[in-house]
Length: 267
Length: 156
Ligand code: FES
Ligand code: FES
Image (cartoon, rainbow over all chains, first blue to last red; front, side, top):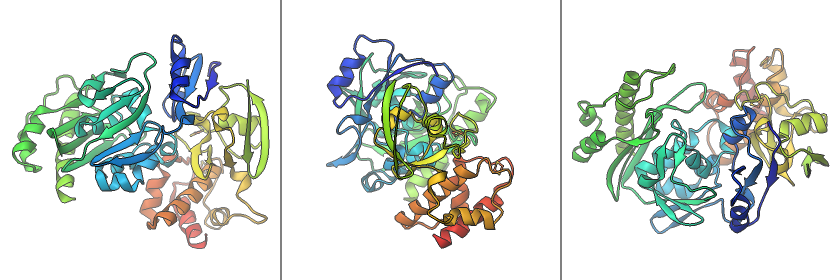
């Protein structure tokens, strides 16, 4: 790892000041992606601004029907939170399936969303649940947040402070995990919420997480696994690599969507 | 350089370290606690697993300076006069061969037993295998590791 300077500001304003005008600086949360990336010299931030010392950055609360999860909340805390299990069990299950127990004790929801790895789990949850990313300067809806591989609508120096998830009637997440990394080879999050039925696919798209209109239309008409049998799933724009070809991934999208639809009904 | 202080195995320790120092490096090189092994250095093998404030983490994927004031337990700190039941169980059940993965297995094992107990969940063989997702062993084929953790769970 190259040399870096570590900062642990106590307030969001101090964090923003450390980031402002310093394009060598990067935010650090759980570090479960950033630190390995730094070891490989794929990132070499001159300054690391750790947000875990900021009051209120971690924690989970329900505001009426809305679940609010602080950006620095770990996957382990989301997985075992009573509020999450009650409001959106699918989200708790998703968190429980990320990485392994040790990684879940460090990795955070804000870090995962800001990184927007094309095979990460949380982007699918945010997009399917129609959540909102709250930053130090504004709120960004899920539909506006993801802009492509490892790219989001976040501006230079903008800091995610929390993520809000509206209540949904039903939801489930089905992941076909890459067995070594536990990332999604393909995973599908289905939800029936205030914005209607939304289906988000991760692990498959060349541009990262995406919604699948065909699956959404089919589930809106008839929420059942069988309704997805004849939905056309195009291989266009799907990743093809040594883990799986585009047509294999297309097939997995249907298989995972069916599993998720069934799991959501069974709850 | 930053001065970092923490409590490691109950003892207050501190050192000036470069900011990019990993917890695994701090433990092994500054404190000479070489029981925490570094197998992969890429967050996969779990040989470096330690407990930070009571929770298992991978010491190769945490910055020492970010853990100012933390309480850290390493494999050197689990025995309390006599071996920890998890250590005894690995011994009794032939849960190790070369022993390289063993410190991480024991730290992960203690964590999962405590966690399942706290949540009132049953830690059966399937659950142990699932929980060992982040710990790799190249020798044993895992059967005896699973048996060891089951055995220890009954005695802890
Ligand atoms: S050395 Fe840390 S996980 Fe392998
Ligand atoms: S006993 Fe040799 S790696 Fe596990």
